[in-house]
Length: 182
Image 1: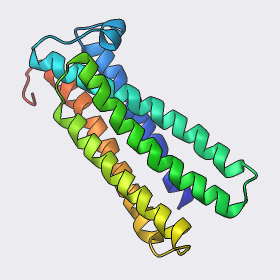
Image 2 (image 1 turned 180 degrees about the vertical axis):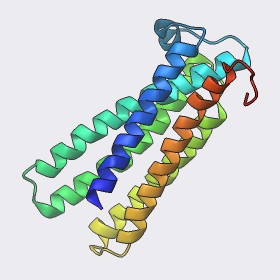
Image 3 (image 1 turned 90 degrees about the horizontal axis):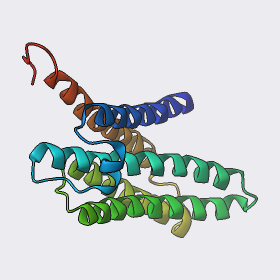
Image 4 (image 1 turned 180 degrees about the horizontal axis):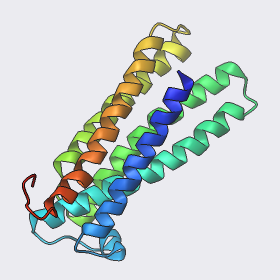
């Protein structure tokens, strides 16, 4: 099971990197324009900028989460301390991701793409799942939600990875010569 979870984690990383590379290659704007510029009223530019915000913050937070999660697991805090810090941190981690995506969209004056909304909603569900797990493991000191947490988190990560991969494939299909799939 652990090898499956590790391969799933790498699949999420690869899907985010593939989405980011596809956006940077097939977008009208350069990296600096995507970072600091504001999109015009063109729908495609709005979608590109929205997805760039989502994918870049998602990749950054994923990397940060890996390092902090590993640091928490090897810290000398005791089992109860690790549980408290781990579940609390990852709840806060998801909340900060959602808030920063919304703030960056507001700064850029960019509309939310459908994929961005979907990922934000899924991150909200992950946040609720992390908070429920925190209550289950730390406050109640039980393990009632172990299977819900384990399989729910895996399912949500699979859905997130497939949503992240949707846009690059859709964008690539637009450039097919016969445009049958666009």
